[in-house]
Length: 430
Image 1 (cartoon, rainbow, N blue to C red):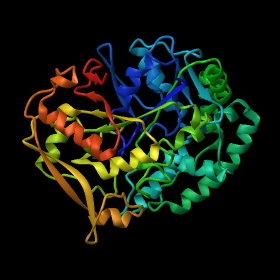
Image 2 (cartoon, rainbow, N blue to C red):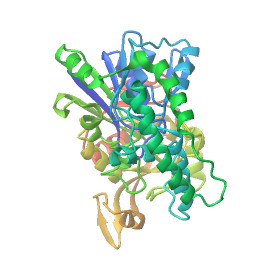
Image 3 (spheres, one colour):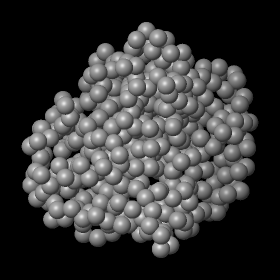
Image 4 (tube, rainbow, N blue to C red):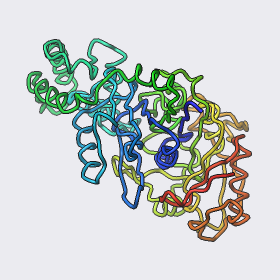
């Protein structure tokens, strides 16, 4: 096995971090390949809870190298803060176990200001961005003329000159877009001084990670790819425009890391036993009622990064099946099975009805998804605490039927099940 990938098949927050953490022992390198500090993993390791955004979950393991690859956008202050946080919890972080791509693009204060302005301007169709400048940084990356990469911070003269030009143009744009008349222009020199200070602190970590990964693969090292967000938030293939600003499905692994997809031998698709979503956009199985609130409370469905309450609903097999096909998975990990233990009945969306027609295909246009009415199959609940289950055969028959239904509808075997946040509360099929 040369490489494994863990990718979410829903709208993110599928507890991928726990699976990555469990699989890290079987790998030498963990790679984060897209997104920024707008996504987070909560990992429980040796009795401690870690909240990771930019740092790969591999950082918690001695002897494992964590790589932040070119497809990630980096806010240096946030990254340094996260490094200090895990260090305060006893985690060793050095230039030996954390590598950062010199090709990764950098988030600046004006990116956050732009994002806030644009989001406020959307009166009814706000995307629900985290306001961390992720999308605006990716936009500058695509536009090129306003883009700055991590490697540029180590060429101070060039960096200052470029930043001076960029900030002058950003100030014009932001002043024009500001509606409250309280805009304060950014100071290019002050930003340059601040970011060169960050660069000095990160210098031992920054390198050409693409070359590193290819060398390590050739040497027989085992790579684990850690996705952020979920397949339905993919910029090209998700529920556009209510998506993230990178390829968050399995499609993003190659362009985000520089490692060819053919080197990946196992793709694990992660889903929750129900569905959640953060931010705006259609959500066919959403439960805006006491059942939805029950799932939110029992599942602690609040954002790792923002603390925002997540929208909760029944498992959507139409959406998850699309995510599975998009990412080319081999097997499923079903997480948070224990959250549904108190319910008398559990529904699964097996199809949509759109404008009077039944379909099992996930629509490509947001208007059709908004019109989709879920077609449900209702199954009996198990009404038993399953958090102590450690073998598949020890699940109640109703739980096994539910998991089999998910497997059948998506078309891939369920090989991993989670019944709680701790590592030992995970069942692997033999």
